[in-house]
Amino acid sequence: MENKAHALAAGAFVLAVTTLLVALAWWLSRDGGVRRTYEISSPAAVTGLQQQAAVRFKGVLVGKVTDISFDTKVPGNVLVRIAVDSNAPVTRSTFATLGYQGVTGIAHVQLDNSGASNEPLVSADGGAPRIPLRPSLMGRIADQGAQVLAQIEEATRRINKLLAPENQQVLIGTIGSAGEAAQGVRQLSVDLRTVLLKDARGTLQSLQATSDEARQAVKRLSEKGGVVDKFADGADALTQGAGTLNATTLPRLNRMSDDATRAVRQVGRTAGALGENPQSLLYGNGPMLPGPGEPGFVAPAAAR
Image (cartoon, one colour):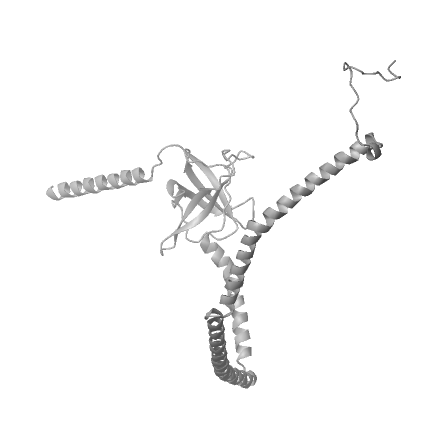
């Protein structure tokens, strides 16, 4: 009887623990809020992506992967169904990529928006709207891996051809010629430096001699009784001559000009008088005729 009681208690405990685990699993897997279903059709492999994988929009958790299967509409493509929170701003310009967490290789769906459209994404045939999948960084690297390997192989083939035995002697000769050319350039630079130093020394000596001659010429010009002093004496004499001209000659010329002006005026008056009374040159001026209102005035015949 006691053994049956222990077995009943153990069974009840196991049942209770199982119920708690089921309830915990349901609570952890339950969906919070309203979710919308979207589809992602990809011609590339979705390695590392599993059901219940996270769906993030710009890094924010907004849903999960509900199903992974083959696309019946596009043969050869992989169809991924995702459930996304209705509050997520999924528009016609939203696209998806596969992201990977660290070095574990576990993938998740990363949603992003290019900002080209603000219209909500809807389906034209009434089914689940489809979000385009763009290749991720790892996908682009995998796609270009073949090209990179081909280029590496081509470069290796050319290097092997360049280092072939028949080309080694040519390379050794080229390297030797380059060394000789470098030695010749070094020797040429040494010779050129020597010539330049020699020419520079001669030029400096010529400049020094020219400087000494110029110094002597300046000394001769500026010494007592030299060209500078004579030029200064000539300038003083010229200044004195100009002063004499201003003080003496110019006043005399001014007086002569005034006398000549007066003489010209006198000659002009004389010529005018002769023009009016030419007989005055023989008989003299005589008495002046009386004017109007004076005794003895006789009016001209034209006036009468």
